[in-house]
Length: 333
Image (cartoon, rainbow, N blue to C red):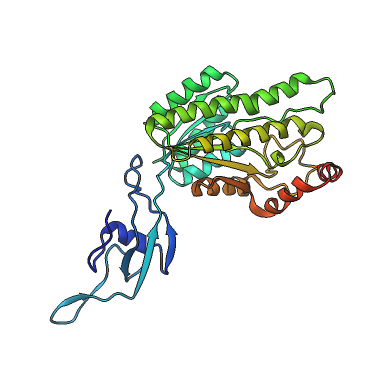
């Protein structure tokens, strides 16, 4: 769309004006009428406004001899182009953070592909979302992310079902680790395979789809525990989350100038099935809704990295990185 050239702005510019009543440095405009087509950028458009925020055209006044626009105010909106991410795949979506993010995206009118092992919960979530949001398309597929061949097949199936994928959230994971040397290598291996090797498969499948489509947003869910080696049952879990953070950063470096945007999320302790076992011995446990909302908001901004929720974790994480190990251990006990 080209900048407005007359006192009467085009409909898109007027819609932008209805959302900004002061000088704005960055504002995203989305074309909600066509989910698959990104909105074109608007650059330094001067918009003359009048009437309520939802008016579709400038008000006019009949002076008796002519009709002329009488703007109340003038603002300049510089709109930064960001592709619409209408079709979103979330792994590990049957409960916890995955289900919470799905609910929030459905509220925003996004079409969803939800995958997990527990299909009964997936189907219940699908029914809940489609009842609350009839215009939203929700497809569910069974997927054990440790079946790496199935990851590629199910991702492709979800792409076909939604007519494409714009964002993939690599969320599936587990926290089944045991203290190293306790004789439970099987549990630690399972955690490592699920949280890292399976995340690698998901990233591979997503980037292949995005590269073929020419655009896409990859979101990798790490953890604040990636900031430091963690003691006890969190040792393997923290190591895997550090690994996926490094994986995401490597993909981001590889995609500089490329079609794929990469976001790494570092959630703090958020109440979910995974954190039930540590809820009574860690501090700053956030409720599920506020934690998921912080994650979704960060995704929508498409930042490279985000620690969520911001408070208190943006202060805690740097402290964890530099604190003596004895203090880290005390913090987690």
